[in-house]
Image (cartoon, rainbow, N blue to C red; front, side):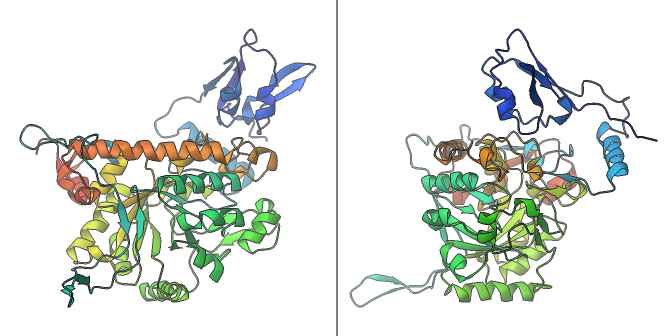
Length: 503
């Protein structure tokens, strides 16, 4: 017996009086919601993913969209999502894939933290009149400096400094590989990073030759599949990142379907055209902190100890202990990816149920490194669900040195977070390799949008710091006294080491 159809998730309507039948909705929808028959536009609402491409391109605002026009009987446990997942798995017998970050309605800790501001007894600073220092250095710092005076009376620094990345803003762009996103999307991000004086990650898809002009602002990634990794790739990056885990899918690897591996991607990743690019769950040469330390040293040796090496891990229960082990290797920074971190494709069960929030992970890692007296040995980069400048200020106050943004950068290029990246049909030209869709994204225009976003967040960050009487990002880092928890339970406040409001 057939399971029958399930209720439509979305209903698309056209106001026929407003519609001028320009057919732009048909041209712009890559999911086949609209079609023309006998000069009229027909709609198949079941194909809609809420990408909003048709709505944004309609010149008459004639398209309307409603979520759940026909719903299930309400039930507190058996939600529509739970019922539909069961029906779909009963039909197909497969793992459900999903895109973007965790979609469960867990409380957002950032939203339950409030920032401090100066009043009467401690003066605030006006960023428009006084200099604010937002330059950020990522890498190992010496515990103390040894300075001597030479015969001419000049001071000389004797301490040998480790290579650091210099950022004009504590905001970087996270790793999104060529394959997961289009080359035009990567070009847009690279141009934006160069404009604002920050860095972006290549992801594990290699470094396309069109990105070589921006290599001084690129962090190359070495992941478990080792796609595209050779000495030329390592030497082109300003820094190297070893990817151990990803917040959206801790404990498992990645999979780029063969149909996405075109000739260009196969050259960049150094794999046969049309073959699946499968990243194993573990690195097959890393089964301990000692193994990881060996890979870090190998990469440093290969690049003459001239480049910082980062290690990226997913935020899980023992993140702090792992970070302390990483600090004792030759690594220069740890990247912690929270469970709201984005992804092009992940099993839904992992995306929504595995990992911990980035806020708790930052605080526990920062405190562990301070407790062990090794905070200077490692920079902390936070990623996974950074939505605005307030999130960045709170992440830094909890202990991060800098943040990676991913989804936010994509949204600034048009992404509507519809979560269908894994289908390769992104109508905004971002998460697709279909040439006609990729051409919709103009790197010159979109790089400007991404740069504007980072610049505006940087300005807001300086305003937040000024209001708190802080003129240097260094003074905000790990400064949890400038945070208060609102509507957070005692246990969470203890993990964050933040006092409740009023205290």
